[in-house]
Image 1 (cartoon, rainbow, N blue to C red):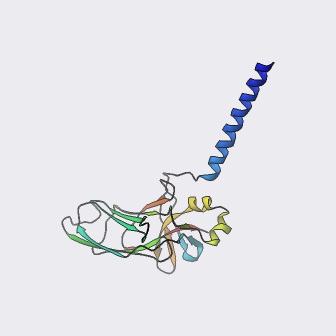
Image 2: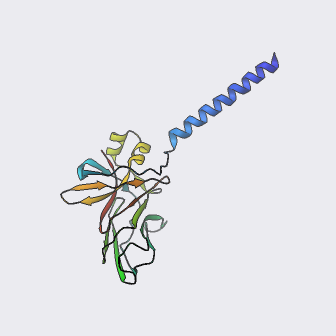
Image 3: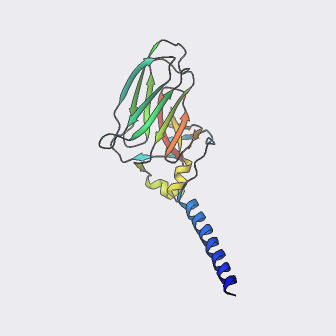
Length: 196
């Protein structure tokens, strides 16, 4: 009888641990996805832009030769200097290899966003990756609409600001937690946002 009780107690304990730990893990960690979010065009007033509480990154101007891959890394200011965003140019981002290209990146104050301008138009092969692990700051509206920070984070995408107060939420990928990436068409203003 003792052996049966001990066996049932062991089985019940294992089942409790498996169910308890599994449900807690799902409730606390958003699931990274390699599936891009769908593209959408919305009024700027209908998105919730991800805010940052960290020291702002500095404006950056970089010149390099077209035809070679290049990654421009923007970092939050001191004391931590952690990554804010990466702008990634492939070898084929610009039509004329060998030509000098000048790129200017100006972070937007108080939000995860930047203005990008290039001296030569891009032709594809350019992307931006925002990293928001340390200074993630969800606006109060995000709490009201999404009910949880995890749901808001899952809905985040890179958006390109258009004319007439519109924003195009680009197909974006959350490959890892606290990081969102999208292919971008070139010079424009980009913001990390979620639809309302």
